[in-house]
Image 1 (tube, rainbow, N blue to C red):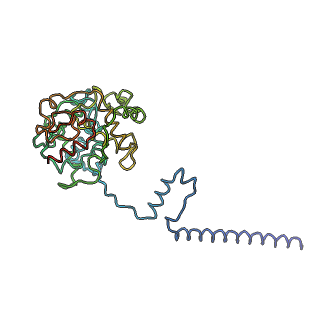
Image 2 (image 1 turned 90 degrees about the vertical axis):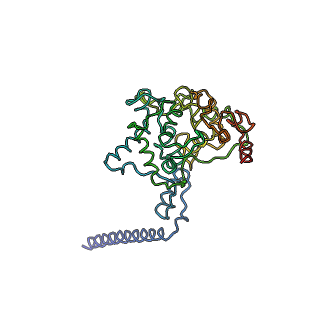
Image 3 (image 1 turned 135 degrees about the horizontal axis):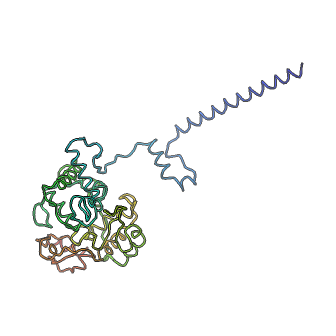
Length: 360
């Protein structure tokens, strides 16, 4: 009898001990949570292994949940998905489709016309003209019509679009009243609808980079291209076609299917700024993968290789009728200064810019 009572008493002690342990654990856990809430987020130090492997993700998550997020003052286009199901909305959506997949409709095997080289408008105007520092359309609606020194005339959006068709797409212009042109214009104007006249939002156009103190080097650029570009654009700059064979996944950078020598990207400054903020694949304006120097040399290499020639505008005075207005890196003479075509194309540019400023 006594033995049974002792066993019962021992069982009770075990149960009490377990209950006490659970209560103690709960109290410790609660105190830990309270301490974490009271500690400043900036004083929390991650383990070394976490810092080396996933620190960016973890720190970003902590900051997002414990500190006030900084204001995003970068320009962003409106959401295309918010367009209403109206004829106007349909027109804008069609315009975006034409920008994103130009070749499907207007390329060598286009379903509407066959008037361009197979590249898409968004090969130069990234994310259908909406990417910050991706040669976007943010300022088009607020600045056109405007006088352009290149043509020596006032141009509207239709003329500007056709410039791209004739130069970057090495093709033929669209009629102003054509359904496709009207859709492209409607989309471009919609993208920039919230930008006020004379306003330059952060992220507009192309990012600024430092000038070189030497001429840009095609030889150095060739090495950079082999290391960082040819995996997508090909050893011969031929690009990579999509499976349907109608448009490029990665566009050609030279050769007969690329932009011609009248295109904006044929100027080294434009090409260098473009790749600095956007290339190789995955680079962004705030996380570039190329230095300024590499960007200039890469531009020199790509634009030193043969491509289609738009001779009429460059040799017959249609481009820059007032030669004093030519940009410092316009690669075709005559010029209003004594510097050579080679220096105007490859640099160094400081002397050219200084001489231009002195004349002003």
